[in-house]
Image (cartoon, rainbow, N blue to C red):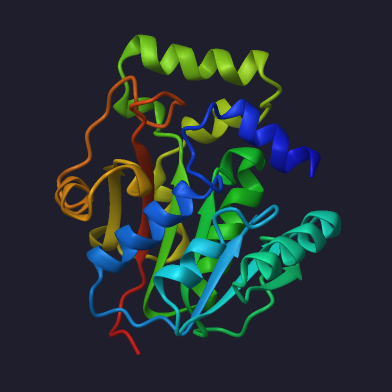
Length: 244
């Protein structure tokens, strides 16, 4: 409850009515980017209390949606919250470097503002696990902050400042990594890497979101930074092979 209300205050109303706009944006981007994808199992890794887990079930009602986290109190609250909203989500306690799924069994692996909370070896282990559990044709999508190498000097400095003065010890190390290399080192093909920037789904029309999210990624001071004109950044890869 403290986290839920605290995030509402911290975000100044830019993350959606239920603090779920990231989830809505990522789920609907996935729906539009891969229209032939018919996911049966979607897994949100590092889900906390499920703000961005619930929208996946709303975007893909026939899919089974799981929220994974290491913290059992967050999962208990998340379960109660989803039940109160009337949205069936399965919450599981698990670690990102040991996903509790068989090989080739998951259609979408999703994370939001999660990778920068991890040391680099664990980030790489998560990508290995995501590639292992995804079905051929399945999608790994991570909502995150943009990498340092696509930003101008001031915007990169601003986010690095946040690392050092906002209790984010792994923030800069993560943003200095090559996001395409994270994917290819885990087994994804270089050609299957994607990155995208998009407006907030619940704040714009379907047509505006569709047009913007289908365009090439662009980067400026609003990319990933809380503001009234924020744009979300996502990256990941589709596992090679035909979707099933």
